[in-house]
Length: 384
Image (cartoon, rainbow, N blue to C red; front, side, top):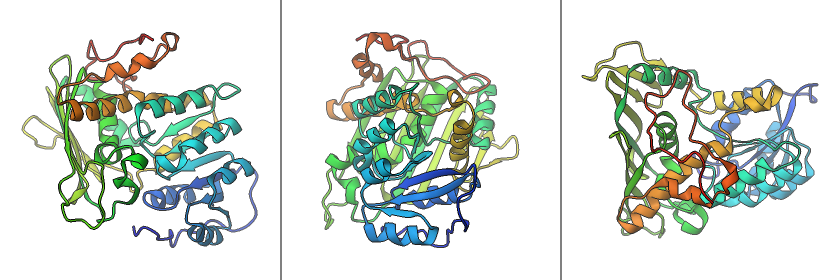
């Protein structure tokens, strides 16, 4: 949507707050925020009490249409409002410091991926929420596979297809010439691999486990005469190598179209192809072997619903916590290091900064079991 478009046509139910409704806030009102807002307003358990954006006029217009309170200062929204949950659709660079305040307030947070700009930033944020008293404070990151029915079905079918041996992901989008914060390495941290390919990488790390080695090449040469110079990569190719011989490739670009998001995983007995609207189960020849699974029209509807279910029930059942994303962040960090060194890098090395007593384990497989468990995927007890 246009950079400063208000989420038109989305109206909150009228009237005073209802007993049992969760009072929530939303930070960030542009980009993916319109889809997040749509999912929130479709939830009968939620009342959007506060909205925040750096653009005070945008926040005020949307707040008026929703009967919410507007903020241009994220700190004030977090500290002054007593919220049952905070939803974050703003860039990492705009909210990282303020999320610490949410943890101190004991406010559960649901955030659009990625978790952070770098592994060290992700680890720090995870620790802050884990140590929030009493018993920690939930920090949940958006991901489809633990909540969306079609992705759950895909995971089960993949487990039935045998050992995965090849993955191909293609992520393309032609963003506006002015990349804004995305083109600033200080604010964005990095470019297209982190901010566009993160969901595909996270899915592969979940289903196949962390790789033994990562190799990547990146560039920013696709807009040589742009009026808006940028210093983040606009094109990236990443290859993952597993100890059992499986390989995965990711090609991403945010200066070329048409818009494409496709992730295919080939196993010994067939393949799974994930598109934005449907998921296909194929035989080795690429022919469908069952009716495609329809994906949710709003990709955040099921993850947000699962988050709300967890808040209302046993919080220990919450999935996609910040800690669950650390291996994905390590893989991405290894890719950026590889692009600089020109050599294959191991994502496991980033866990050397963890304290020995933290005993961080590899990601849990989906229900039904992961098709493979690479023997050297991750150290169960990283050294200090």
